[in-house]
Image (cartoon, rainbow, N blue to C red):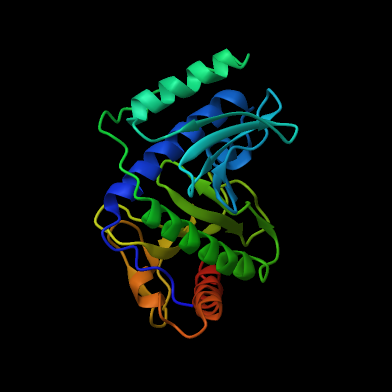
Length: 260
């Protein structure tokens, strides 16, 4: 089955991104720092994205189908909060208030919570994004299973709103110091308004490296240096999972040979 087109979804995309930044701020405020800055990430769920277990013992999740924030503890629902009718700022404030009413005191940073326009989430487009996200998650997880050595989990990064993981080819495990290749899926970035799959390789000794790739992927050097595969070029391939796996394995082998 072809992936959804995600046409004219920018308003929905940006609203979901703003909500991910809220959930991410809650996680950062309520967990201890983790290696490779993983406390800044979110987990992927079958219905959206969530924090890990917070210091209070609960989990905060956003459901892309119902457009609701849900907080549960020990498997039991504590509260839910609809995003409808809110701006990013008002939703964050309402979330802090409902946490307080439920007996939890949290103080997430508002540094990236500045949106004052109404969150425009089209239900059909939000469901399409979830379908695309789940499909691409499966493809990336299948590819990730082919790799050996140390890797970070496959997670969602609220800041860029991308889903990805890092593989360390040289036996290291520190993203700030060791040779690494990042793989993932981004809904957009500066200069790239349409979704894409990416891969880029870096080490202190080499900087970012370029490696030959095969269609539908191509090498780019604007925005980042590495593999770029447009979502629109991948939507209708015969075997999506195999196509993703093949192009990323090719990049992984060629790029890792250059890292030192």
